[in-house]
Image (cartoon, rainbow over all chains, first blue to last red; front, side, top):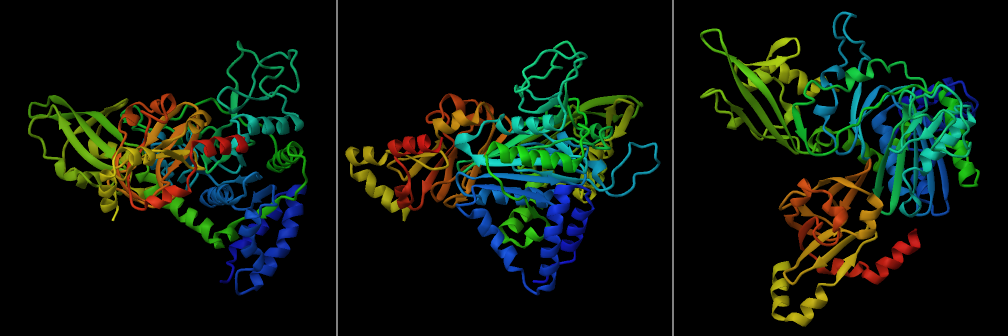
Amino acid sequence: MLLPPRCIAAARNAAHLNHTFYRHIAAVRNVAFRNAAQLTHTSSRLLSWPARVADPHSRLQAYISTSPNPVLNLSIEHFLFQTSPPGSRILFLYTNSPSIILGRNQNPWSEVNLSLLSAAPRGPQTEPPDLGAVALVRRRSGGGTVFHDGGNVNWSVICDLGEFTRDKHAEMVVRALRELGVERARVNERHDIVLDQGATRRQSDTEDTHRTPWTDPDAPPPLKVSGSAYKLARNRALHHGTALLGSPNLHVIPDYLHSPAKGLITSKGVASVSSPVGNIGVENGAFEDAVRDEFLRMYAADVEAEVVGEQMLEVPEVKKGYVELKSPEWTYLQTPQFTFSTPVLERIASGQLREGAFTMSVRYGVITSISLEGLPGTLELANFADRRLHEVQSWKDFLHGLDLEVPVSHGHVSLPSFLTSAFPPTSMCI
Amino acid sequence: MGAFRAAGMQRRGFAVAAMLRVKKYTEDHEWVELGEDGVCNLGISKYAANALGDVIYVELPELDMEVGFGDTVGAVESVKSASDIMAPVSGKVVATNEALEEKPGLLNQDPEGEGWIAKIKVEHEEELDGLMDEEAYIKFTEESS
């Protein structure tokens, strides 16, 4: 199989990052990429990568990705989680292009404003700024929805379940941040990393990663800069976290993470807890270096960080996870069961409005029932059942011209328009 | 084939049946307990329930689903952690513990009793032979922590 040009592009991207650590590894890998590109078959180095990950003697491994593809990076991470040997500790660092990453057991329709994910330009500049195509990915770990972009470095540590605690590696990242002079960083009670907002410096133990000189219960709430999530399986534990270093998009994140259907969806599964967020203000490369150094210090060893990227798609197990993660079945049909219910209004002959309720139940991403209450004899809706919610292309057609309106904050909108904004066809969101 | 074997077992009486009901554990911290009818109960161990912390969501397998050895048959979420529940045996899901959908906390309160997850009609009983008994499992958890 001929390696595609994207491998070279990935190497070039890495070289653009103006940082010593990155420059060093990029230089090493540029040679490997060039050599690989000349071969007509997957290079032996690539074939040996899975074996090296699985090597029982590889007790400490560190990787950094050159790919901005969230699906690929999560798939490489999952491969490391599944393949690395018992007892080993793995560090993986990656940065994604703009994307929204759902927790394993979350509901995309209640967590995300899906109609904003379209790549198409959305009219005049007075609209909320749009980022072009934003990927939607359901990750394999638990927790809430997060936004990723180039100003956010994801760090991930894999170890045995027996030595795992939820704070251990968040504390590692706090120590790395403090090495970079970020003295306000600490781990909070939700295992996230926050920056304290106290006004005055107080006495504090510098070794305490759960307290800073600016910890002050009376100060404005700390800003969350890193959210944690975990995956536990086969006696291994994966802890990954975001690190908001310099995202230019903080002001639009709330637009993306506010669903028009929120409040109308009653769902099992996991709802996100929203927190005020902030940027740390550190360069990506400096952060990557500091985290790697702290990881190596923590486990008293010295290994070189290996660069991974698009070429890992050649590894069948990575590809398999990639295809699964990218599928609409994974993204949508894995949604815990939920019910959507909204008041609806019908205009009757006298010009008056009659109020009813439109209710839709969804299990495994499939509509199991739709009902209309309070509006006598309007429609027989049973035949709408068993459709996959994300595959409904036109709510107008789907509802056979059912002429109802939904009350919203600024008046009324038609039921099909409202449903289209809350449950857009998936072609609109990737 | 499983049905024939199950019928045979029932005739053998209590002593054998009691032996067959010995609980076995997996390295993934699940427990299985095979009944005389060839159906085994599946759940997660107390050790796993402790490691998970407060369980807030349990995804149960679909009824009648055919599962293979090592397949994911469910998911648990606790304190931002997702864990898979794997099938340590092949067979068919014949019951799920729907009480967990309303009260996921049962998994913490009584993981090896009321917090069972599913019942699987076992296809190859010999798959259970490779699993650990309680003593071996306790040793396993002590060694890995």
